[in-house]
Image (tube, rainbow, N blue to C red; front, side):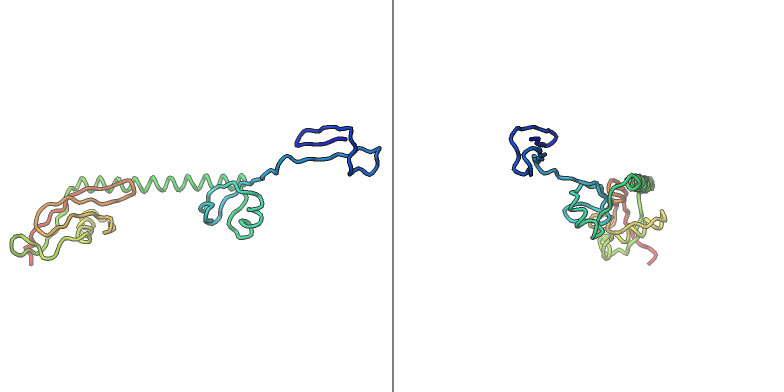
Length: 189
């Protein structure tokens, strides 16, 4: 009798019970273990516990066939899709580098200018009325550079008197600009 185990074929002299006639030899296939088949897919939407949109993942065939494909969460990874992902990643990387370069240019401009003057009304003992806020600093920067910054990205110490203070602004995740804020007495009022 001939028996296949995985990729091996063995022969035995005992007749198989599954064989109809004693003169005929039967082929019996014995599987060693179940093989888990996986396919490469590209996620078209974010899938919890699997990944984000645009990621390349290896998932079991049944999971793709029964869940990801019918729900529209994934597509099979073909050469065209893989090339498109590579192009898209290159474009995104280029955009990130350009954004960082602009932020570095702005940080250089802020350090070159060095100081921004803000005029406030003053009471007794050089105490200003109110305080200097991030919005005041952003307005002064806009007047001198022409570029608008977000006021929540500006970090200031508490300013209640006339003087010079150090300030920073976060322009990018990796770029921080430093400059000085000079608070002067407003003589026009």
